[in-house]
Length: 324
View 1: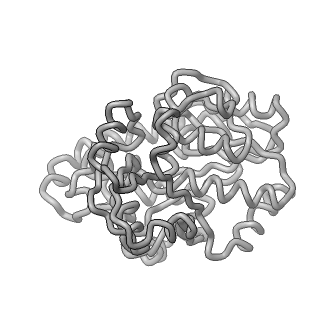
View 2: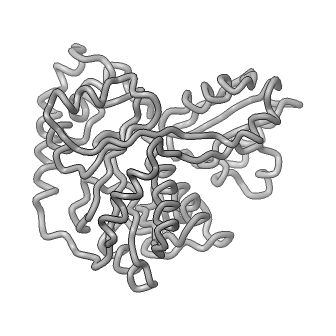
């Protein structure tokens, strides 16, 4: 499902009509957050979440934080809820589990560090600790009250920002921005802040650390595609970001195909895309690549990349302060 255009327009008539339902949604979120006592894992828990729906780049940020924990000498586990996962409370095994079984994000995380998949975050954290985790990076779950968090990073897309500042279904937010961001330990802005997130935070008096950074695609892969006409497809939160990135790198995107976020590709999907591409390279993201049938992966070019903080030292200092 694509986000409606009015979610980015302040004062849109659709938002005004739906605002009462947004009040109900916000109340339900607040009630869920007050329910019960969060379980303490006994090791530092770093939550990487957001206050809105849609992709903001949480998983690449988790991987970047994982690199920093590795630099700090901390043996950590990733904890992921496994979007659409068929199995729960398992440590992901590379080459054994599929995206259908554990989710696409979990496979990406597991390629970098041990990863537990469980919708019940407290149970999943207990499994990670039992397996020797000295820290946990939780991918998503900012509004999940079952697990005590030591640090909560709220990730915001610099282009989409906080949308029209309305709560679902009137806007993209899961809770009022002021309420959610006052619970945050820090804000991470992905990409250029064209929405004006930092200015808005200052205006509201929300004085939390703000870290910035961007997704950096693999330069060698892009260099090999430069000047070529390709067929590109993506099933991520904002597919246009992938297509625009290719264009900015000098790749000619002759055809672009957007799929819903977390879309699981069938053999027919990929074979049809290959037929449409013909002699043109068929390219996609790392998140989409893991969902392609394995025997067809060799016919698709993946454009990997990493998230890089603009001030990595400041983020590392914050992490080390929690660990020590």
